[in-house]
Image 1 (cartoon, rainbow, N blue to C red):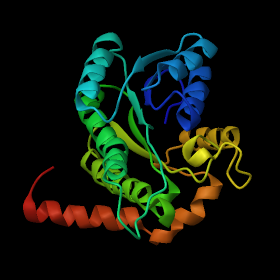
Image 2 (cartoon, helix red, strand yellow):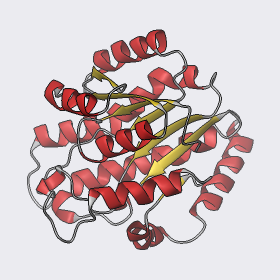
Image 3 (cartoon, one colour):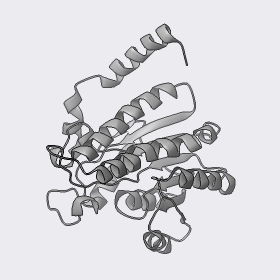
Length: 252
């Protein structure tokens, strides 16, 4: 990914990894627009980073997504990078009765939200040079954590979607990236002070270094052991399978 000269929209940019990425990219001379539900968090970020802008967005609300997408295209026509980072993570009880509200909110926010956000912007992004769609998933997409099984499943679903979308956009100018963090010190699961978790600033520094390469999967060193769980040559297998499927069923 080109690390400067972009116009970048980041969901979930008011805290944690989203804020860290927004600030790192802002410092490199990109125009950065962040989004989130909490106005106070957004204001704190843009006040600390003059020139950065913010828009309120609820990725669980399709109408909010459509409204913000239309605003972005109208007010930031050079937008060429979308980073789908917003997500929620809560402990659950997959060994017993599931709280339906938790189930619905997690899947809606973590899976439907980024799919809808990308869908609303993808035709615009296809017209831009150096276009990027990125998704923040998790190493739990590859090695689930049972006490938060719904969250882990949502990230596995998003990883699968990324593989499909990357394949289907292979002949366009849009690259599809996946950022799969390990445990990082953020608000998720109250991990800010967890000694075992990776410090946020270290994660952002390592992630930016990989973002600046031609890698499709953005993995810091601490994430690689989890990614290896699915076996070698996943992309080759996925692409070969889909080439055969296209031959059988048609499509592009």
